[in-house]
Length: 136
Image (tube, rainbow, N blue to C red; front, side, top):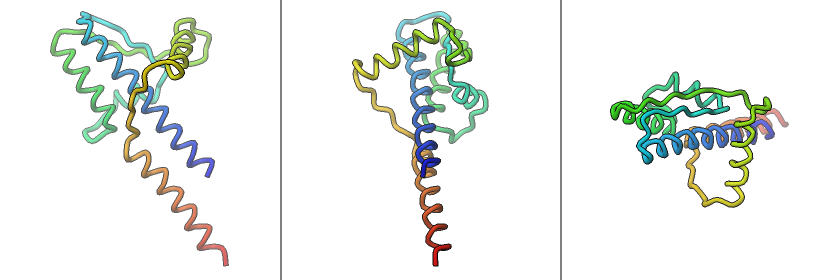
């Protein structure tokens, strides 16, 4: 059960991190920036962006589409991974602001991918079935 909760939390964290990147791209587009660098401590999100496939997570696809659209406009956007909780001043400030926004900011509807939710419940169902099957 604990593993299932952890999987759901990991899916949720991934979704939030990916949404933050998507929001950063929207900001870059809105401000008509010529070039920008997005720093993220979410290695899993950046890896998904490097190895995405059609049918990937809907947020990953939205990021890729926005990134390509910006490139077609001549906007140069780089994404750089920074180690989390390594005492990097900028990253620590961003984490602080992210926590503040969750407490004070406007709610942002973030849809957790169906596959993440279904995978979590499927694992739970299999675990329950195993318990029932072997208890006699």
